[in-house]
Length: 490
Image (cartoon, rainbow, N blue to C red):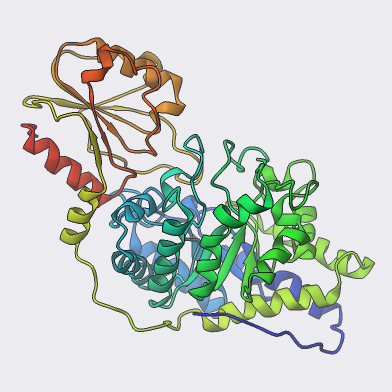
């Protein structure tokens, strides 16, 4: 689904025409699972699209399909998107976990055909409920193990591996008629902050960026990615003043790499974008820098869309946003709308759940030997997922859910489930106590594994750790299979 456009100059729009363009470049989101009248009015006037977030989804596929149908009855051309990356990030499968493995697992398996099949499975799943824009895959190279927001969403810490699988996933997804949105340009992998909460800084020389961050995006462009998403982070070597979402220098680099499709902003309500300036001002800055479709963020009132619309119109009127830039953005958005729903390439055979489970198991790392888990109970140390992952099922269904801040360890054999333990001192403290016990125990790490911080002691050397490289239904089934082989029964 290669999307390109060469906007042609046209006669100046009247005021109503500019107002319509200012709606067409917005990908907005409302609260709740129903389309309210004020949102129908926005769609009828030309709103570019709707992004579905957690509050829009009940967990029932029929509800999603009905909501999408309601949107399309008002505006058939509207894009409807959401985050469905597979693995840890799923919106359609929060109750049961994603039916496909995530990026880190696929990168470790390193079978591009399998990755394409997974992308196609996600696309087929989304298309079945009418969704035509997927905010994925992640092209970030997770070179920093302390990254709090990318982690297992990345295919690899190696740019060549990441690029190979980003391209395969894009081809698979778009073969089902769903447009890909590759993120987060120019690369969010080497950061230790979450741009939902603050403004990260990527300190790297141009040579490093060209060797590490940019190759997966180049691979995605070559694969025909329909859209690319910006990141809210500062890259001083490219622009020492503005985050990428507002930087003409950084977004211009994406164009020089040959990308002709639509540039989508990351959600403008994130602190890395709108803190200190507000969403309407952020929207104008992002358009002026070269973004084409503005993701506003979840659970917003229709009044905010009107405020963004008014800010764009005012910027055109005062000359701070050239009318031709707005026209170009609307044309690129329209090109994605026109092509969405049309499969790119020939779909292959669907991948089976059994193949996914078996392949996922090969990606696991087992440190040490599995202990005898006869009679073991499963204990989950409950930690809040990052905002991108959100709530949902993770890990084997536990016998006990405990807060690591006041977790007591019961007697007997234990399977202790954690996420990103090395970044959480409270979790590390529990694992240090676990290491002191004489009874059989296994740590199952569902996040991006790091060092055994806090339990890298002589006492902890005997403690086995199983690293899954991400949550999904195939991973859960594969872990349960391994536990049963070690004597565990439920």
